[in-house]
Image (cartoon, rainbow, N blue to C red):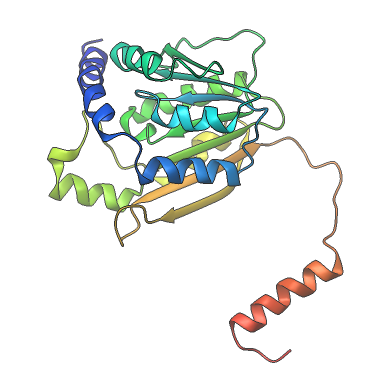
Length: 238
């Protein structure tokens, strides 16, 4: 309980810094990749670890015909978020650490974790995705964005003052196993650059493991176009 109190206290104080920072390249990259993963105007979204709602606000703008529920462990952050984004009627905020999160008969199209799992003790991750599973439907998507583990290890060693109260490198293999053990499959994963030439972030797209019932072969023109792109890229003879 004392550890949780310390975490809550840290993020209550961190809320002011988030407000000063505002929207940055990381936030814009997250929303861009969410749209590419299929985020649509009618979707219902649960965002975990929303802070003061910077990403929540961007998601809500993209889901104008849907609903966004954003949760965070910090009451101060939630209070600021409610004030900052009160004009967005499709955006709602709640204080929650996901342990007791229950929304009877509510399902979400997207579950978004925007650089939050590295701040939650690893032994709690499985329970979080059990909760996600209970609120998912056959087409639900999980989107996870985290610091690249090698880069975060460098930060811990070289710039620890910039880190948060809990900031742990996450093993990508273990993260994938935790999510897949709860009924999702890995659709896409990429390590890429946001602020540094060295790849400093990773994102994952998971989809529900509902079985494939029908298959649709690619058209011969699509196959030919892909072959042509590869040959041109490598200057191979046709």
